[in-house]
Image 1: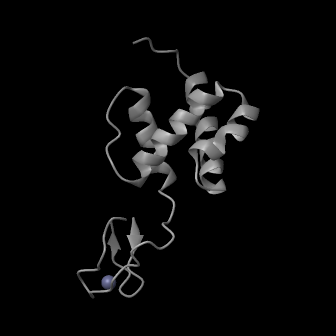
Image 2 (image 1 turned 90 degrees about the vertical axis):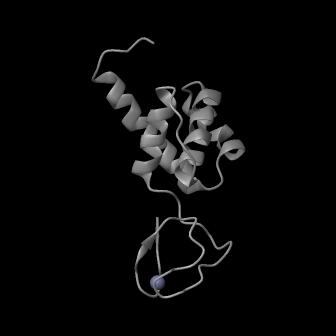
Length: 114
Ligand SMILES: [Zn+2]
């Protein structure tokens, strides 16, 4: 989500123009990173074999999921391979936090088989 800088109304990241005040969002300005909670929920869907949907959070979740599989739970590999999957250090930091949260959630409940 992003806010219109003029009227502060909240819109989806894909919005090109604020319908309230007709402010034109920059076409290819630096996109704000997706909300971490949205990425976490998209990652959860991927882990359950569900469709994470579309949008920046889902696309980042798919890249983070691919990175986790590449790295095979090795933190050094995670760092080394991150430039192949991620676009910014903030995405890497988010991936690390999501990985920690994921590990905690896995440790606190029995493994589910599929
Ligand atoms: Zn506006």
